[in-house]
Image (cartoon, rainbow over all chains, first blue to last red; front, side, top):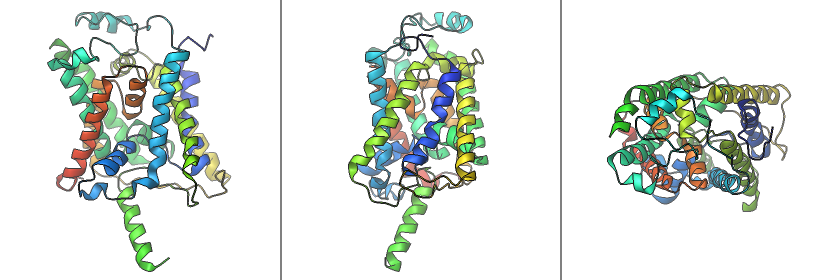
Length: 186
Length: 168
């Protein structure tokens, strides 16, 4: 396998991803979670006397360094060892997306849906602004996201995390199969 | 430490612990540059995100439409490796690199995990990204996701604002 410019298979990426949990525990007693970075940013920048944002966010500043690293890692990979060629998409999905004019698989994200140009359409506003809002609101309401609940929570045998993860999946199934087709038609 | 300080600290801990996982903290004071190790960990994470196409909107649709095993394999094996690691840490009472005890905090069930979880799922399938991938998507040069990230911040803030009125 050419690991520099070929996509990595799940059985390489999954275990590596899982190792982030003990790594963070060992290097500083930190529980892996990403959506908290959004809360800490709110607490740091716009606390507005809301009790939920009144805490010493500086104690959690590691989380902001971590998401900064994630961004940097993405920049470095895109510059130095991007996946070459088009994405290999399931043919049924490709046929379905074709109906909505999504035919470009050169990037990880369809530029037709996620670009500055797309932002100035109803579809773009719903998907980028609406979708982003639900991600931020929902993850905080649920007390964590895919990293905090699905990975570290379930790995630590937390029943609430398993419940949350099932609900994440249920919401995703509902959106992708039942609601998204109507949004993509816009 | 004065009793008042301890009370204040424990109140603050409750406030943070309520629904954030980040309550573990090193009790040793470190200079700021010790945080660079988290930048390094984040970089490795970002590399995996891109190389395994975890931040791809297409892969999320495949997952939610049961059209590919890729994401199930990733999340499943990540949980397995993380669970085994936590088991070993607990069993052998492994300490941090500073020699501190590793702490785990149980999560407490509330209705938010169901209602918030469903809402999060809707947003996840729309943007093709959970919070981590939002940062990584920006890193790939899809700069419009900055708007999505700001919107996610707004969502977090609005939750904080209405928190007392929402069912938990």
